[in-house]
Image (tube, rainbow, N blue to C red; front, side, top):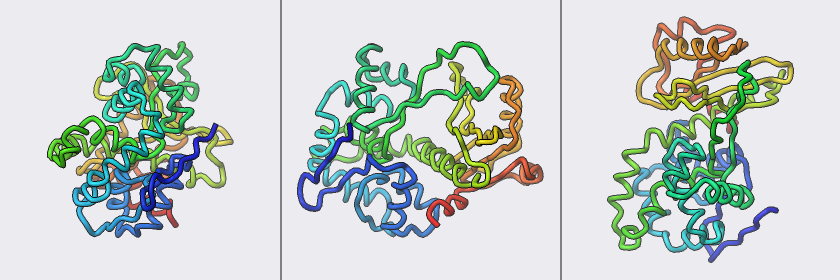
Length: 310
């Protein structure tokens, strides 16, 4: 059942939760003409899926105040309709927004039991607010029963921003007190942007394999949460059966060769034999890692994402 929403008043923004992430990114860039891909990604992480035009020459903080916090009541009314003003829904969504996205972690953050939480997840999927993601262990040779928790993704970056930094702090925002919102945003900004980089990297992989199209793409994780050592941020299979693995790092330091070593070690453990390794790094790669580049190892930066909008 497709939820159809109308503007709550003339000039109010529409949330494009019925479009794919790639469509949202393309529309965002077409409407706002970012000067570079890093700026595009940073601003998209906040405003992605919100159908408004913003002045990208202004600082992100200025635009958040102008288009989100100062418009709190109008947007809150809109999102209230989208989520049926359900308190359990809002608890789960806030739990997802700043956690590791696992269902059990989100329910723990929301302080609700599993049955109530999973019922909320099913309803929120129906409302096209979130989607559920399962670890792609079937692409590995790990034949043990998969009991690992699913992960959850917002259908738009803006909804994630709202439930991370606005909705939980509504009391202060209603009083036009925004410091707490920006303190939390500053504390989580790096990892907040990192997920969008990862999602757009998946879209980049999809369009890069045109001769042998991607049949399945996602991520692998298990129950070991220690430093995310047992996670693969990109795991894909082409129509011909080629396996692609990859890693995404949205930090201000260059990716080092040890990240390649970590992936190889994990592949050995999972009995994966990748045909291609794709590494995405915000700030590029060390010379040692660049020397490994070849037909089976592809290195990309945030600038590479420009091909998504050409």
